[in-house]
Amino acid sequence: MKIAIIGYSGSGKSTLAGILAEKYNTPILHFDRVQFLPNWVIREQDEKIRMTKEFLDSNNSWVIDGNYSKLFFDRRMEEADEIIMMKFNRISSLFRAYNRYIKYKNKTRPDMAEGCNEKFDFEFASWILWKGRTKAIRQHYRNVIKTYGDKVTVIKNQRQLSRYIENI
Image 1: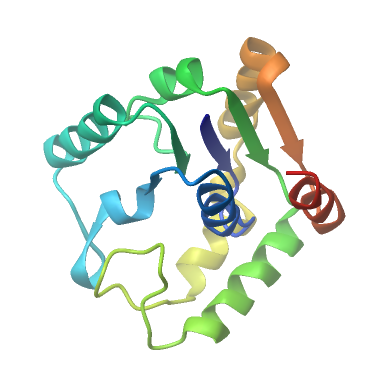
Image 2: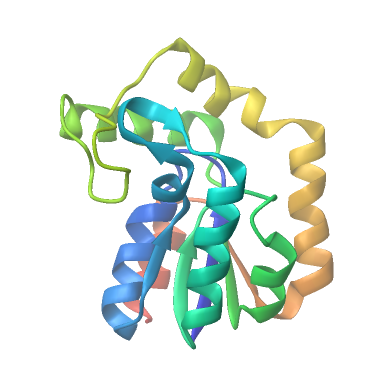
């Protein structure tokens, strides 16, 4: 089983990835761990590509959460048996991200690179509300649905997410 989880920031991609990896007893790759070094330093692109390729090449099944279009996005979508698209609305995503901040304040959450303590600032809120939902990004998600529609599951709210988890 190969599952790719994409979608908006704050929608619960990493949490769902953890649930699915445990359920299917399969390796998991959180792209936030690939993206960042301690203290929110961005890893060099060549190293991110190497890490992602190594993970994809060495696992027959996987769960991967995160968008990161420059990290073998097309390959991930092609190879995935299921693509889960998390499309919670802006306010729900903001609320979920803030609750995550409260839960992990001054700590590193399990799906984040070590030494990246949880933060919630204007820049991140702006990303959740506007910058991460541009017309181009919305079109990108429509293209994924158009191209891979038969294996895409779109989850737009907590009720749908709960139902999805109950049925796995």
